[in-house]
Image (cartoon, rainbow, N blue to C red):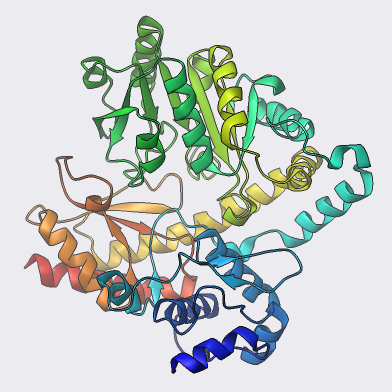
Length: 474
């Protein structure tokens, strides 16, 4: 496509140069997302270009309109598109990389099988239930509640969350201590800024852990890594550090998948109280536990020392941009100050819609459905891994949307990177330990997600993965 053709797309309303193929294992949603990304990253769709409406593109490709809606929403959540109610999607200004860059070349490699961790199946978003809650809110919400409102979030949602988190996660929360955020990223940024304002300077973080620490570093907190093992965070090593706070994922450590043991929980609570320290608890994957009842939140053991963070990104969809913090009384003033500085929170109407889903029981019913759905998909993935790679152990399968695959002992960090690159070139996207830590010891690992991939695509993708491991481990 020439540059003049690309420019002309900004005024077209009759589709995109795309097609989908029902004869290949890749899902229609994955094909559509990949096709739009290729157009963006090659420069065929430039920043500011308006994409066709969901109705037009669905008709062009002969697919369902909800599938196009989900794809646009996912690309918007990832930063490639800008969405505005009542308008066609627009290519975001930062989405298009410089032509010829290594990042563009890497992304041009076609992904047929998406095995990346921490990604939900967006096609399962409960549209009917969400629409019903939205309609109820719009019918009942008085005009006086359509203003900016409380910066902490909708009182209706904060009350609903206080009841729900206490009932389901054992969280001790007063509605006044809950702050509604635009997802986990904003929640973590606010928490770190509030900790710094309170005098905290050192933050211990699990190793391995999240790969994006920009918000933490912007808060000026000094990060100190602490290793994790099969029992979770190594608390004795934490105690040897000069820090005043710790970031922890006790319910299902990301990315390894360990659950913080009962003994370590007690050790961590003692450390918090003895040091007058704080923990930022990301209740990661707590909703999706398959083989036993979920363990209660750490916050319930030390509500005055733990900041509790949760989100609807996996239970519903990232595009909703809904998250929450339960803040100890000592940090409430600092948190309120940070809110006044730079956050306005998510839309009030969406907050009240989530509250209605929780209060009506629809949220619980949806989660029960999704647990069965993901458990069945996990079981299929584990069966394929056991058949294709019986000699390799898996970890972290009891919860979440991915399993951890321990690579052969002879594979080092370089070998892990080679496997991931090889898989990418053969159409399989996954991630390894190197993405989440450059310092941790122990066996190398791949994190194999099952949230997004279709059931029919699991077996062929695992066959490609197994072949790559065997060839590169030889």
